[in-house]
Amino acid sequence: MSYVLGMDVGGTNVVAGLFDSHGTLVRKIKTPTEKRRGADGLLLQLAGFATELLDAEGVARERLGAIGLGLPGFIDPIAGLVDAANLPLSRTPVSDRLGELTGVPVTVQNDVKMIVYGESLRGAGQNLPHVLGVTLGTGMASAWVSQGRLHDGAGNLAGELGHITFPDIPYVCGCGMKGCIETVASATGIARQARDAIAEGWEGPLSARVSADRLGELTSKDVSEACRAGDSMAIEIYRRTANWLSQALVPVIAVLCPDVIVVGGGVASAGSVFFEPLTAAISERLHPLLREHLRIVPPLLGDDAGLYGSAEYAKSVILRS
Image (cartoon, rainbow, N blue to C red; front, side):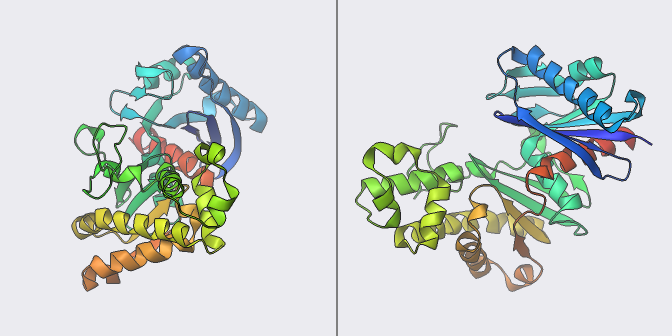
């Protein structure tokens, strides 16, 4: 019986999980990401997780069949190279080097793709053949899984919905373009819109709680809480953001015709204040036949989605090849 290790490697924390041959998550650990000692220190940390989890479960090392990693940034899954701005990895051959440290074949993929892949197979998209996933966190990204297959696209860049531009979005994106939707449809973007509204004189439950010197600390969670308190501008920010997102998603829906769109990340955690206007705006713009087959739902696996996705991806590439 082969075990598989899945890891979700972020700029702040690493979560690693050990899965048995039935795909059951038997143990996981979470710890701050080692970045001070460069790529070597990070890879040694990841290799140590394999030993720690196997020893904790009393599993012999030769029973570990594969390791799958989900990482932020630009990933070449074929060559196993990783280029991540918030990790000490620059065209680093992660698959080869971690494989040498552990003696186990390793796959690497983009972290958002692994989250969506996990939800498609074991979460909100389970038993549905066509799954589109969107995450609205620090930035915005998406992934497409059809018949259990993850699509990378040319240059492995499929899913960069966050860089669709709109003329009425006033912000300059980190990519250098103006009007990218991720500058508003993200946790960062929600907070930015609220800060601007307060600076322009918006008064309500949120502005009453946030002093001028603390404006930079305001988060999307603060804005969603203001919505629940009936703050009209906070509600308008979510409605406006849902409208922009619907404009980006409707053409994608028309081309791909997904069974379900799984929308996760910090913005989606606001719940109905975001999902209701998003569903309404998409329905308004969508052909009835497309609308009939579509559901828009939050994720089910929470922080474990990336673990499930990375482990399942490693199994599909290594153990079933």
